[in-house]
Image: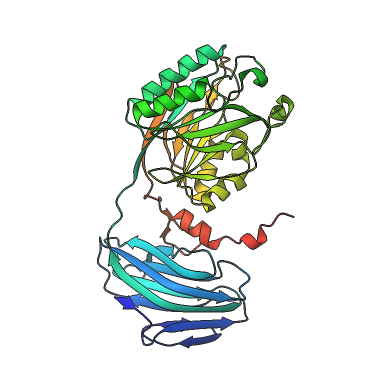
Length: 399
């Protein structure tokens, strides 16, 4: 299909300087308006998957996303069906994207542009048929428990709900925040454990038993202090990741909890995940940073938060979010909220209010849930693709 620049097929839009040859195309401009090159291919075959790639070199651009490459899919009447940026949000290197052609598509359009002033050189544009991506199915279980009056009772309840979820062939089970000591009335200096403690040992054994990942949250102690910590335990019962709550509530400061200082993501056999804890979700930066690092699924342990906050984090980042909430033995506690699993478009795929239950949903991490009419003219787009390619990090520096 497309391989290199055929100068008879590429059309320029804009008043600035263009230079196009068979090997490369250059745009150099000093004005703000958009300048771009457009190419249209009329041999799109519905149902097939294509890959577009192009090498990009930019200089003197104020915006990291100033130089862009975009694929558009059109109907016979010329109206847009969908648009997608070629991903690579740095100023040098290859931008690429893969897309499946819908049944009503007759043309594939490609545009290479520069937003704002600066210089960009494009080379090696290629459009070729490729294999359709297989689904990446992940069965997620978000548990729901009440606080217990003793830690022994809490462990019994934890084991029961993990057994219930594990028997349903899930890939990851999420436990709620500090559920092993929530409501027992003891100070954290007495309930805090090491990663070799009773709760951790139980969860490692259950992960092996059910061949699943488990996210557990507890008060962790080490030689430096006490933390509110989530562990990612893999299918072999090994610790695959550790996240310490970075946004500590005032009440936790009073209890002597030390905040974490990192926002890591972790590799699993189904994709990259991030872990967040309760109050962290009130700060949009936490989920955004993990998404920028590649997280496709955010696993949240909480005592209880409003559902709209988790839906917001899912939608504004275009990622799946799974939340495990709890409740105290006082059923009138204001934090009584359901455990839930949320799609990138904000749809709640599963949720539960029942103590001792788990919300279970089967998600496809390759299904990014296209939405209609985001920041570009009327067309379907993948939210994460749009947000990450139209954000302006140079404006977001801390004041």
